[in-house]
Amino acid sequence: MSALSRNNVQDLGRRSAQPMLFAHGFGCDQTMWRLTAPAFEADHRVVLFDHVGLGNSDVSAYSADRYGTLDAYADDVLDIVHELDLRDVIFVGHSVSAMIGVLAANREPDRFARLVLVGPSPRYVDDGDYVGGFTGADITELLESLESNFLGWSSRMGPLIMGNPERPELGRELTNSFCRTDPDIMRQFARVTFLSDNRADLPVLNVPTLVLQCSEDIIAPEAVGDYVHGAIPGSELVRLRATGHCPNLSAPEETIAAIKAFLRKVPSGPDVRHG
Image (cartoon, rainbow, N blue to C red; front, side, top):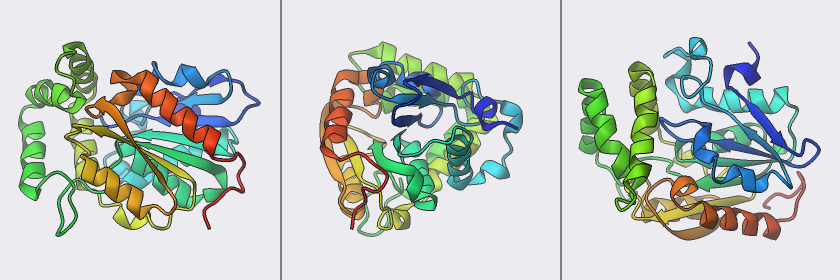
């Protein structure tokens, strides 16, 4: 099966320019980038896609066995990169896709020029001195609630994850995105997302990386952003004024400006690596 049809790949912008590959977060699809990605089309080849089981991807390609870890999602990213023969890729990953991008870049660093990690978290569960933002009991309760009352969970968590309570339409959009997804796929993806531990993958990353950290983010609090920044050699951390977990929707102008500033700062080319 072609990765382009499987993942509903949209290939936009300047085909001859440096590619930017945008990856959406948990329970969402590529429309989450509609306010940010177009700002890069004049200067880049912009590639959007849906993770299998989400958006307009080919749901028949989904199996709980295959997508039981984030590694399978990283495989899909690399399939897209190979099928389009993308090189010198700027990967922009939101939430769980930040770690998916780290996994892909660690496997084939020569394909990636830079990473932009939006609201990343390598582990959501607190562990000793590590602050992930959730206790083990919190995650168990979250997963049990998702299992027993999918629609109720979606209605409650969408606005909490989005933040920005003064703009309820944003929370409703996230809720609706959750509700459009097959409940069984959402439950499985939630387990994979919230129980993963990718801390060991960060120190070996050898691609220039920007970490974008929001304030008042209940999913990836500031301590997590600090950890990711400290663990990735030579990374840059930018604290956004944006609140909540989805600045690509709630604060697109600030998100675009931060990414463009990073791209101007870091020289282009696949040979640019941290020493």
